[in-house]
Length: 171
Image 1 (tube, one colour):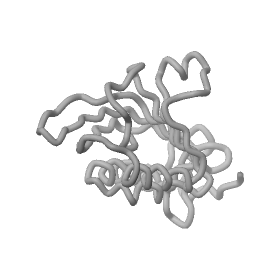
Image 2: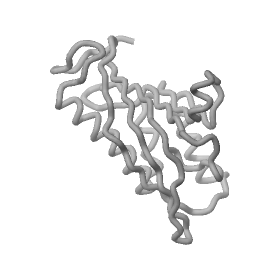
Image 3: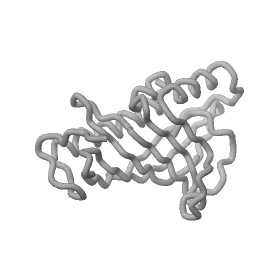
Image 4: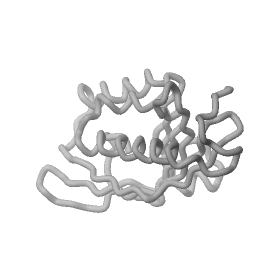
C-alpha cells in the first residue's frame, strides 16, 4: 500500500512533524472518549474498511500465538460486533474510563504511522462500583486519508492473561 506522506513528515522510522503528532494524538483521545461516553455506534468509523482489530494478551503475543480474545477483519465485522452487543449479548450495564499514555509515533516507509500507546481502563458498574478492568498497550498502524486518521490495524495487547468477565465493549 502506498500512502502519500503528509507534509512536514520526516523519513521512515523518525518522529512525525508536530502538526501530524497532534493530529494523531487527538485521534487517539477521540477514540477513547467515544467509547467512554457510550457512543459505541461511532466506533467502526475510526477504522478503514479493510482494517484489522485484535485483542490479545501479552503472553499470547510473546509466544507468537495467533489466536487472541477477539479478531475482526474489516469494518463490517466491527459493525456486526456492535449489532450483537445491542441485540444478542446479555451483560450488566457498565462504562469505561480510559487513561492513555503519551504515544510513541514513527513514520513508516509507506507513509503510515506505527503508534504505541500504553493504556489503563477503569470500569464502573451499574451499581457504582469502580475497578481497574485492564491495562496494556495499543499497537497501531494509522493512515491519514484526506486529512483524517484511520486505523489500518489496532492490536490491543492486555497485560493480564485473563479478564474477569465477558468483554463486550471494545477497548
